[in-house]
Image (cartoon, helix red, strand yellow):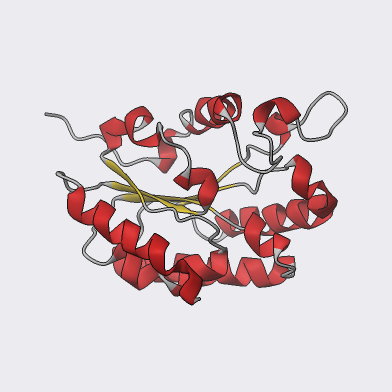
Length: 202
């Protein structure tokens, strides 16, 4: 996984640059990485964005120790998985990668809120619709056994009236989100207060 080297070095610089103790980690692939407004939108939770471009759940698990070193988050939110599917991995493999990542977080940080944002439908990967739904469904099931694991469904909100991915929410590549797409995400994610650290009274 040497091709992630530059992105991982960037994350190290991000951690060193930050002037506060992050309480919430956003982790995963480019859909979080490219969300430039994320630190502002969620600033009350002292966030750090540790997503890295092109990453898979396999890579998120593999590089977890390196990326989380020196941090003590009170909540973690994850978006990843569609790159795994795009690479041809089977949904059940992806669920195993996620379970491995979740187990590592639990071992290091205990029963903090951990949230998975559902794999999005996109025009460029609509051929994977069945695999995306299957993966989402199986990851959602984990919430039945882990009471502080949460699943946020953004899938249905990104479909148009015909039940296909709404192109209005994507940039030209049909994979990454535009401002409208991120607005949909924010409007859904912000309502899930259980996924965030409890704000301390000043």
